[in-house]
Amino acid sequence: MDRLAALPVIEDLLSLVRVVINPGDQLGWLSLLRAPWCGLSSGDLLALAADKISASIWQAVQHFRGNSQLSQHAREMLGTFSTAMMFTMASRGKRSLRQNIEASWGLLRGINCCRSELELESVARFLNLLDEQEVAGGLSNFFDFQDTVYSSFVPSTDAQESLSGLHLLTMHKSKGLEYDHVLLPSLSRPPRHDDKTLLVWHQRLNTAQEPHLFMAGVTKTGSEESSLYQLIRYEHKHKQLLESTRLLYIAVTRAKKSATLFANVARDEDGGLKEPGSGTLLKRIWPQLEGHESVTVSALEDIYAVSKTDASGTPDDIQPTLITRFNQVLEFEPWEQRALELPAKSEETAASESRSGAQKSLQPALKNAASTSSTAEGYDHQSELPSILGTLVHRVFETYVSAPDRALFLRDLKSLEPHWRLAIRHLDLQHGAEEKAIAFIHASVQRTLETPSLAWIFDDQHLDSECELELSRFQSGQLRNFIIDRTFIDQNDVRWVIDYKTSTPSAGQTIDSFVAEQRENYRNQLDSHRSLFSYMESRPIRTGLLLTAIPALVEMEF
Image 1 (cartoon, rainbow, N blue to C red):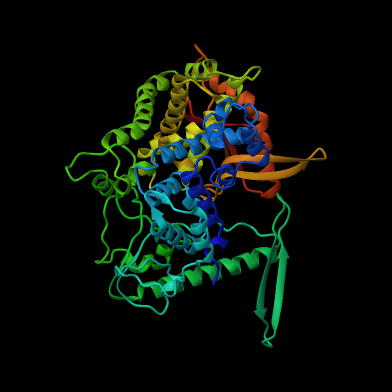
Image 2 (cartoon, rainbow, N blue to C red):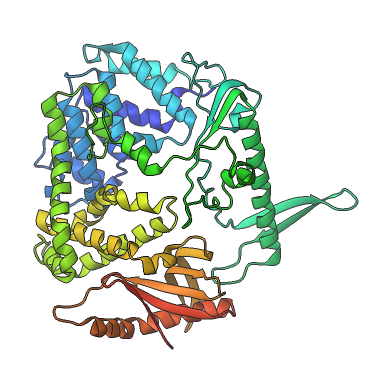
């Protein structure tokens, strides 16, 4: 059995405890800043430790924006890290040490550092040990607590019993067990993408019952896969599909009284249920479930309407944050809760107010956002901002293609705002300029995705459907890399190659003039993309520009 302290996540928690009980612990801060939730390099750690203005590393972290020696990565990470730790330090003495560490770990996204259920259980074990040795909101001796952790073992899942009668476990671990009721969620979730491995192998028996080993290596990018490589990958995929079906059978038959299966299924144009995606567990049992009297269908909007309404029936428009989830545990004072939520609410309000204006005139919004930013000396932010916003729009389109519920995705588009803000934070835009940039993304995405004539482009049911496809080929003696925004084969066996463009017409420019300009600007680019696929297949190829400012698909002719 492994020691508890052998897990990196426990070492990171020990560092967190060290700085909370003693903010002057320099070594503790260095360890905490090196942990995965911040991941600073040795150079950045040295820059913080050598800061002559600050008396401690914690002070250097709080004033990191004035440290010119820090890398761009450090500046991005320290923004979130310093906010979380300032909340943690402000909570010292007001709550128990266990509550403070647990909340801080959540704010730092510590759960993302756990790679297995065992590590999560080990974190719970650590917090219990901390609770047992806590004295007046601290520890009588940190090193005694550290020795206790070092002498403790990783919890054994086999020996644990659920006192509440509720067991949370994987289908694989349920083999041989029985429960009164079994709940199986997310059966419509697509399987994890099967990345190509460098080497695949498969062992089969010949007619003489002798084992024969087949091996094949991956081909270089842009080259056609060997028949053997395709065959072995197919064997592995089929084997995994059969194994998943077997595990589903095992999970369902663990129930003594009832088994409830949950899945998200979209409706077709006639109001019926669409078939689930291939590879999902739901697809394996769909013929038996479709139309069965035991199947209950609930509209997703009704479920969300219930989940977003509190006990008094008042709709809650504020998305839950890590702070609000910890509210019941930490027992925030009302003024503390308002202070924590105020920045998020003000940003959402400002974004909402600026969105309508941005939809009317997108080009001025981009220019103002860049020109009013507080740029560094000699650095042209105006040239970088449109590129970043275009990349963010591309990412939204890529996520939308694979979204199980398109309508829900558009309704919850605001939940992506924190990610967008993080992507443009290094530009140091003023608040008004930042809101215009966020509104530009909203307008570009909503205007495009809500246009009925463009919906077919984002249909993931197309054959060979791909988003942001990376391809390479040698051209003029050099290796060139290409990224195809969207490609698929339609029902007429025509390959479509589509490039997204977020450019906007200049002041006074007509739509026809704008379209002609975009055609001319990107003709060579799409011609290169077309030639890439012409080397790989012989079917007809059509190319086009998806202009989000109009929005429309402009087909190219060669």
